[in-house]
Amino acid sequence: MRNTFKTALLAAALLTGSGSAMAEENFFLWLVNFTRQKEVQPVDNKAWNEECGSCHLAYQPGLLPGKSWAKLLDEKALADHFGEDASLDDDTLKALRVYALENAADKSWHKRSRKIAQATADGEAPLRIVEVRYIKRKHHDITEKMIKGNKDVKSLSYCNTCHTKAEEGIYDEDTVDIPNFGGHDYD
Ligand code: HEC
Ligand code: HEC
Image (cartoon, rainbow, N blue to C red; front, side):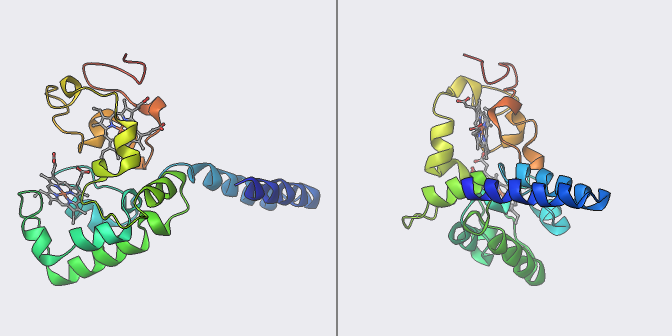
């Protein structure tokens, strides 16, 4: 990360030196992108949003490693997906599987995805994001009263009930607002 930053400063120096407005704009876009790398790559696939966003948030592929998506995005597995039938036609399933595997946590450079990839590197292939050690640890202090006992949340799986920017792939604790409890300084 430190090296990336050095490269950034060097690039900035070179670009400013050239004095071109175009170069400055490119640098700005690059910087915006660099900042985004902190979180999770947002979903940029229409079919994924439609097929996987009707019962819960369309989870970003960068929230699980490829081996988890491979297990989840299987014909048999989808027919009994956490007790629901989430079956897809063959072509859609193939396309969504490719999309998930190409953008999985272990293929992403986004900071949170890297942490998820590291937390699952030792052979685990959790079927749930909330079972990933890193994610579990982050929610350690949240009580059942705030989840199951909270009519506006019900399950930790409904990330976007508390994470106000979850759809954009942003999970930073400063963007949390637990319904009926408040922000991350709830305690
Ligand atoms: C018919 C409804 C339905 C559809 C469609 C659906 N899901 Fe789900 N999904 C569920 C339910 C129910 C759960 C469990 C939620 C809970 O435990 O509270 C779940 C849970 C998950 C989880 C685990 C979340 C966690 O960490 O607890 C993942 C990952 C997931 N779904 C991915 C997908 C993907 C990818 C698709 C699209 C191919 C999809 N789902 C489509 C109903 C659905
Ligand atoms: C009941 C509300 C709630 C739900 C639902 C929830 N979270 Fe969180 N999450 C929180 C709170 C509160 C924190 C901050 C914890 C802290 O400050 O110690 C947090 C922290 C996080 C963090 C770390 C943020 C940081 O700044 O370090 C990540 C990543 C995260 N959640 C992802 C998820 C994902 C993915 C889901 C869904 C699968 C989810 N959360 C569901 C309340 C929730």
